[in-house]
Length: 255
Ligand code: 2AM
Ligand code: CA
Image (cartoon, rainbow, N blue to C red):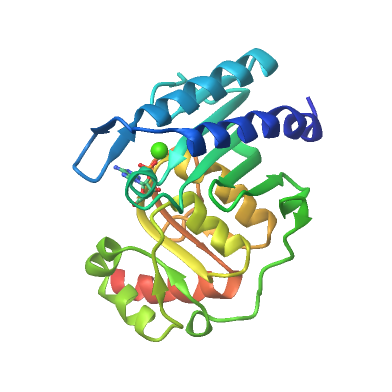
């Protein structure tokens, strides 16, 4: 199945999933790993709907945050976060996403991040560039340094890495939106220079990593090693020069 056919199959499913998120009433909220790690019946409903449709339409396996696991990443595997930013979904009603990637041999070949309330569909195909609602996302600024960029990161990262805190003081400032997938596509869309996070899961990053790379940004672990979206771990996504500059700042911290 070509990447064009994948888009034709997956995007209508995601459009319907978006409607499920928008039309839900009376959320049933449960706590998962900790009191800020939430799940609702809508997370489960979206995951079950998308999994049922895409498995039936393509025959590929699916890994989903709430209830779908895979034994290995051989062949083609869908990776889904039905709602990335569930705390926002519950508490603010904005800045949450549906994130869907298709991996081949463990590497993303297609990805879509849906900014649900803004009705923005960020899509990328391997080697085919990235787009937002069908409009190409142009190459990110490869010359700008972190001092001239906004950096997205969380209080946990700032507290844990004093060198990061120092870099932020010398940047254009830091932001946090609460959905890793949306925060990574902020980098791809050229609005933020980098996203720094110590602990993300495959479903948070698989689609957004491809969208970033196809827009010309660099994505690695926080120590500069290669990103493997099948494994949990840290992430540093950034415009090339911002990525390099932050890596240098953080490496000094490690000494
Ligand atoms: P979620 O809403 O799908 O749980 C908020 O800080 C960001 O981190 C969101 O993208 C959120 O995804 C993710 N997140 C929340 N708890 C997490 C955990 N225990 N491990 C990894 N990512 C987490
Ligand atoms: Ca989620």
